Length: 533
Image 1 (cartoon, one colour):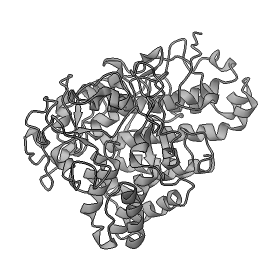
Image 2 (image 1 turned 30 degrees about the vertical axis):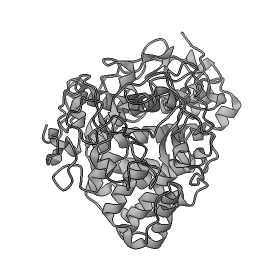
Image 3 (image 1 turned 120 degrees about the vertical axis):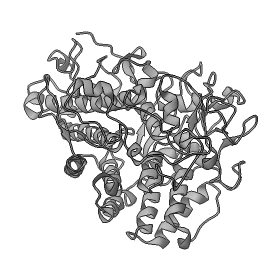
Image 4 (image 1 turned 90 degrees about the vertical axis):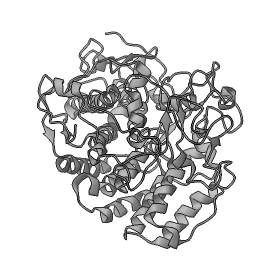
């Protein structure tokens, strides 16, 4: 068996630094590693740390293209490896089609993501679909291999054996997260578990009602075995991460299953709000710096995706930092070696702020020199303001750890407490919470950003949608938010290049879901295409 005992970077703590190299192409939803480095190999489990390394691989699946030299040995083939990273793909599908961002690049079908003109042959949609089910297949294999019988028959480190219930619960959470993403983006998708066959079969496509109920059951059941709030290692999930995901499931239930579950969302969210996570008492900019795991920002991060400039490459924050540096910007100001000249913000996002200098709201971190506000040509990187939110600079002014500036240290907050505060405000506006308490939560965030405070009477749904954009911009929430508020498609809210028109035009409601990729349908002909495609 080939094993590469490599430093795993900041994905997990030093106890989880060693990982097996594993590469696999996934066209089938039941795919698992099948080469001689496979996690199904009994040889692999002769290492007492095997389960810890396997769990590390599950977390790494969100951050890296693959585990090998740099990001070599990518898990998903058929596209350049940096484009195949889970969270980078997630950004492509959940930010580029919205009012917050746009990209100049002409790679393949990427321009269609800016304009609501994607089709089932879009390779970026295929990568996201494949990534979600690849993650699910790995989590399933971990659960197959970690039964009491198998663990007791192998030379497992005693501390790991004692912690196995938590390990299994974390694997279930990561499986649930990917299935949740799949349902949110694609609607009706298969439910594949550790109890399904490992060999070739066609998984059955399930209704969103069935997927919703499965996720609800899983997230409730795993609570008993997950670690308590902030008692797990930084970068690993705990009970509060599961509660946060459950609250999001309920908050979006009207979209998924046509049912109001706001009361349940408020109940699940209360556990998050009562947890030991705290709003970081640091400047807003610290949350997106290279030392956001130590500068105080980490107190707010319920589930961070970890990065290290020495050992992780091509992840989402590496992309967000480099691709945001335009020709009119100085890359050294961001602690990197150069800019990729791609990402900018759209006019409608800029207009949500009181000014373009950031003085009235520190979250409006725009670069305007040499840039126009309006975008007449998406491919022209000088059109659209730059956005300086993400950086490889530390709060001390130093650069991140990579001496070349090629790769960044900045962690990505999948879930943070600020989001929970704004979820509470939304629920209160929908009749499931206290508006005065909601105003207190919102004002804590606005005060940190040096923005004026608001009153309970200001908490309309339109204000909350805009406030979520100001606070959570480019953190992969926007598409879901716009759909939940009825603004993503149709003509009630237009932004530049929505519908491939400079000033925006209404788009069809079927675009709320992405198409089932053509390649996925070829691999599993039982899959039914989403309406409209």
